[in-house]
Image (cartoon, rainbow, N blue to C red; front, side):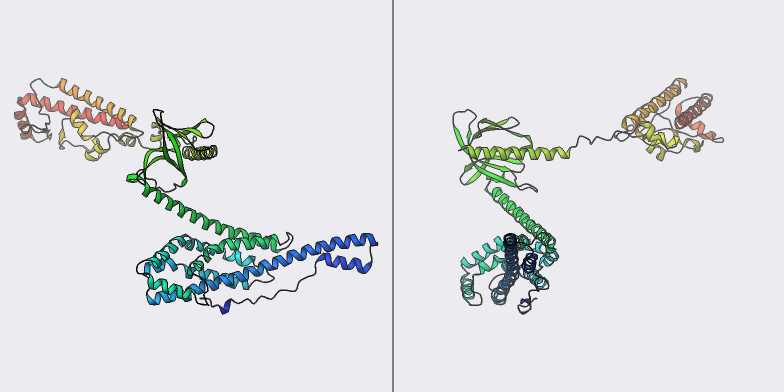
Length: 534
């Protein structure tokens, strides 16, 4: 922590050069270069220039000294808070930790930044204080935390002093404020960091205005001024955001039944006021409370101290039209229309101009999210999809994916493999419907062609078999008739007899049926191989 002894001014003014006007005046007088009349005019002009230069130099030096002296006084004020208020209150436990953090939580941070700035200012030479502000300008943004919490800190301090159990605290603060080392109230000391950033900006502007443009320090001073202004603007923006949020919270609490929801990220409070609204029948007018937000327009009635919102218009669908001058205007949103009139012409003009500006901003921001150049991605063609794929992958990719995984390939099928009699219902159960995406119509058409070809082969099988031969097809609900499977083998005669007995066909006819089944299986395998070749 920086002590007060280390912050004393050790600044010695440098040896000043004589201005050019003074040297010219001395040369003219010594050399007697001009006649009496011209010499008097030139000397008077040079004296005037010299007087302006001396004046600006003195004002610049005064502003520089004020920056140093005011910064030292500011650091001393913070030290007074820490020594005579923070330390005794913390030791005696006169307030809770939460309240102590709310009131004095950021004092040490502000003190460290101010102490570092004083050391940088004291190290500057030739009254050039700009480099110190350039180096420490980013750290000045830390004032935003203290500034945003200042109102809450003062409100907490006031409530503690005026509370039932705040008599001891109030007596202690009065005793400390009356000491000669303090000689000021705690409230006036707490506001000093809030006023410091605007003070930096004003003093740097004054120093820059009294510095000539051809001076080498002028550019550095402008850079320092821009850095301090950027930090101050950042602090002001954070304070404005906090005030907007607090105002929205107050508005939300004042709405009846908390409707509508006005607290939303990015939404800001713009304006509110009282107007007269003409009823739908047009016979009388009622007083309404209008609220304009950054993306919403509310029309409320005041009932028992709360706002009863009757209309909530989104500004992107709202339009406004002047009826009679600027005092009477109409607000339209969908099928709802409000006829409003203000107390005077100026108020109505201000409301209509602000509403039109806000509506245009909302619509412009909506249009930027929907750029006309942004087009939907076109679905890929079959040729693009098949590019770089094998013939089998083209067919099996969408339609026969699960069937290919669940059933063996046609090239590795042996005679000892169990083969079910194919039908449309069983085939649809093995190959579920393809997923619906951009290629769904193509896959659907391909699947329909495969089903048609399979139905045609099944029809050929049913028309070519014997009339007395019947095959039990798989049924889900019938437990007596299970799906039949035909076993074909070179030395399996008992299997053929059992099949013949189950189908009630003579042995001679069973052999013919077996040959026909083999032909059907061969036709099916030929069909699938032809499909894969395509």
